[in-house]
Image (cartoon, rainbow, N blue to C red):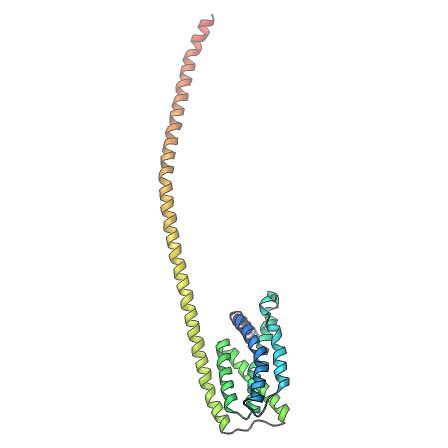
Length: 257
């Protein structure tokens, strides 16, 4: 049983790292959005929309928390596990957790219900792996509830807005999965097309190599035949010379006498 648990955790770790590798550019983009969007939406929510609750300290914390992820592509490969863990904590604390907390604090206002729904859609699209999505979303809900409890010493009330919010969650979840699934299908199709093109190129290269080898083989065969004939001629000439020398040998001795 322990071995099965270790094997499951190992596969999950590999899945998390693969998701991280595929989302590297999204991590940087999301960090920039958080860094720029936090002060921008604080100003909008306090000066324009006048929402019930805002928190400048949480906004600043979000900005500081995302800074290490801006240069994620330049970190050594050996720190990937730590960076992956930090990324998931960032999603829970400053993305999903923050949206959940602000939705609770604003009494499930329409603006934050829409924002929370979009956040769930993005998290599902970004992660794509069911276990990771469930862990991240549940962790973010508990984190949001925990911060809400520390702030108000109570739990959110169940009202009509809360029911409307809950009814939207499956839609965001399913739509996120559908978009992620279609994205994966498109990725697989592109990979198959690339593989087919590579196989076609390999076939053409093999045919070209065979044609070149055939064209080169013909003159080489001719050269080998000529070389063989020259060798035979040289051997015959050598034999003839030796015969002449042998015949001339005794005649030469007779002439000396």
